[in-house]
Image 1 (cartoon, helix red, strand yellow):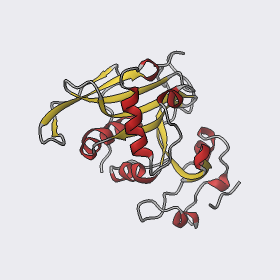
Image 2 (spheres, rainbow, N blue to C red):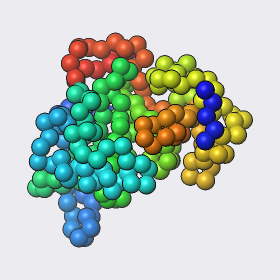
Image 3 (cartoon, rainbow, N blue to C red):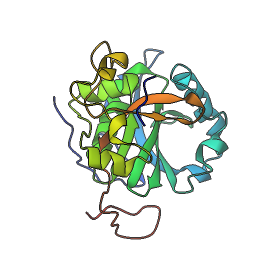
Length: 233
């Protein structure tokens, strides 16, 4: 069905329960310096910060389109979902996070947000690129987040066979080729959208242009059956 509607950061650390950052500080909104660290948490076990997470989510996705209005709906269909949360030292609430869930082809990154542009630049985007350069992590991106990934040297998957394998119900007609006029109709940051982009229906949001980034586990071979399994392709 055809709808019409430099630098790469290498993965240096394995994905562990706690991600420590190098000694690095950035100034928060009050002008004070704070130290930040990453922490991996099972989303189903989160209790105290659920309301805070949803506030950040709703604020960040109001222009893109909101699919969920409470945290339980966000994770209930994905029991093997995790979040990498960034905290300021001695603070209980996260200032940003990356959510991902275990799909057939590995960990699909689904939500990437923060309430602070500096934290996004210094921490969120570098960590996201690190994940997407790790075999078994992938995601569908568009708009500003996709632009930032490409600006930092990451490219999308263009192979039609891989795209149609990883994303259900996509056909060759849905995927943008080099001379496809839809690249102009669905621009990315005032430029043509990337070759390999495609159109698909995203729930109540309707038809959206997306592109795949990362390294899906195409072999579907893992080192275990648990939620923390790793791709061994």
